[in-house]
Length: 609
Image (cartoon, rainbow, N blue to C red; front, side, top):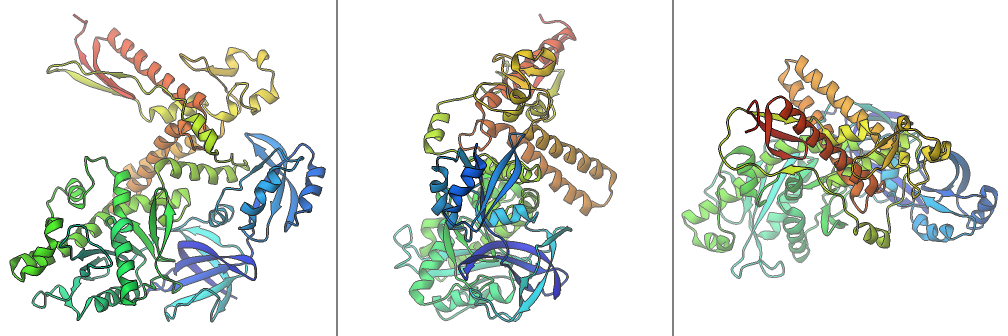
């Protein structure tokens, strides 16, 4: 029996002997060479929860479908403790095959948690957080089906027990950025006709170069005989340097698809996965994402669209915004002319290629710490997290918390339900247009975390909402007619009621997030260590973004905990607080000249003229 402390980079599952085997891709902690490891867990099984008014009858009906196991368990459904049937299957593919059959049994009222991907289920149930350290133990294997890597610097271990979380500091990750330059005499390049002329590489492990068939006189250019050798050299550099994260800019839509097409034409394997697998593409949202097993690919273009708000998101514009510097630029439609020139323009093209990857790496080093912290906080793989919308990130955080609270997660809505929800809307925050002119003696009034604070203080949550459309804890335990004003909060404008007790699920979660953020900010003030201060700043920023996201997703049509009553109540209380604060300020001689959502500017005039 061997033990290893590892940093989890990635996770998936494969089929072995008709059952699922989870594969954990990681780095062995403390190994100076950053040795790779693939840990195999064959013990975890997929399951769903079934709601029924007749548990015994339901069990008999489901047994006829030959599931792996059926158990009666006690879980909470919107805080109401109830009995569920936990139905376990042999393979994750059995869930989509049988869920509709089970749902339509006469004894079944509903099924839950059938739409949680198997590898995410594994992370949640085992309290495993990617990019964190945990301990594994088991038998070291010489080989395993589906793992075709010939690397000497890798171990395979078959786990004998679930992983044990340790936590630990941020891991030291080996990051490489890359970018292609393509010959394009007819505008947009065509992978079936137009060759790659340069591959730029920059990394935090000492590699900074451009691979090309030209440029012999430039010290940062590695010259090769042809395009095939260029791609092979790129693959060899990634493998030999044991890269953990590969970053590009618009690499999901251009660089990796183009590289893949050219590699196929030239007979080059892009076998960059830790298990020896090739580059693959999977659907993420409305686009295909390039994925490599155990080697995390991040497209910074997608990340920047969530990280900062800009008029456009070119690499040049993002770099200037973050660092206040201009980068080398070459017009895209002129690249082929620079390549054919064999003069100063060719040198400039090489400079441009190198500057692209240096700039991309610099952006990655500036922005990835936040994504890494969100990965460790939300508990989803970094590859997934960088492609999740902020609302989806918050939802997966709540899914994980629901498991901790023993709550059964609501289902994602179907197409008709989503369409119906989209017909509803909530009024936004209060806005007072700015008064024209120059103003002096201005003061700013600002509510700290206004909407998250409203959710907590007014207990805004679907499970304590007093309405005939929701079967919740407050209505079950008490007759609504017997409640007094002391038992619930009433939202302005709409008169929507929320029970004061018990604390709602989502207010509880947000409250813990804000409490943790305050603790971290306190530690930031107390420390003089610049490194610790920087890490703590990233942690509190991640918590802030998470808390601020949660208030807005009550009204998102695909949200599991969707509630338009909650969404409307939050903004109604927000408008009420702002308006009342402005009126109160006038009593002290402050006249508001501009207001927007969670604060306002006022000038001191003693009395309004």
